[in-house]
Every structure is written in structure tokens, then in C-alpha cells.
Image (cartoon, rainbow, N blue to C red; front, side):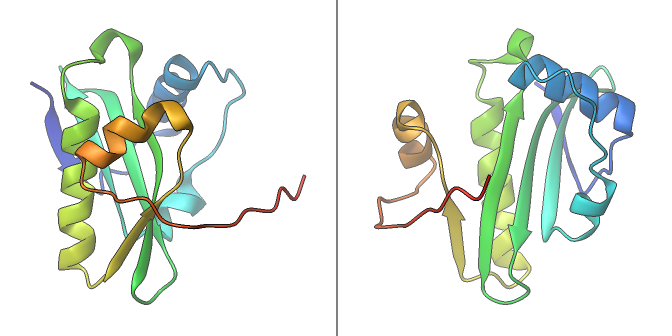
Length: 128
């Protein structure tokens, strides 16, 4: 079972390798500025390689937001994403968040409900 690390700040190379595999997104990104403003982020490491990740953004107050829940395709269906989200929930609570939000596609409803999220009304504007 992968080891969970709190706020690991993975290198751009290891983060982009996971991102490319998990999201089929080959365009490299630099996540340094994003992670430095996060309430927390959790990495799942197997044989010292980043195999899973979740980011918790926040408003600087009581609201936090689950983003980028990712698991390498070779490691899926082993409970890693659930462990990541539950650890993110624990850390967010510990660091003062009172509400944890998540947006997701319909096929992930069962997963997020299994992690304790309940349905809410929400709104969205596509800006690009």
C-alpha cells in the first residue's frame, strides 16, 4: 500500500509524469505556485514514486476545496484515492477549515459520497 505524505512538494518532473498518466494530459505544467498557496496537498508514494495526489485549495478562511484527485492508472481500484481524500479531509479540518467542497463529474458521485460528501446546489460559469 502506498505511503501518504503530507505537503510533499513533488518535483515538476514527477508531478507531470503522474498528471500525464492520470489525465492523459501531456502538456507539462508547473504546480509550484499552486501548491504553495494550498491548505494542504497529499501525495501517495509507492517505491518512492508519486502514484497519487490530491490538492486542497482554500479561501484563507473556513472553506476548502478538493482539487485534482489523481491516481496513476496502474494503481487504481486499490483504495488510494479514498485514502487521499480522507487524509485531505482530516488535515483540512485540523488546519481550521469548516467546510470542504468538491466538484466532480457524474460518474464520480458514488466515490465522493463514499468519502462522506453530500449533494448540494451549486453554480458554475465557464470563463474560457
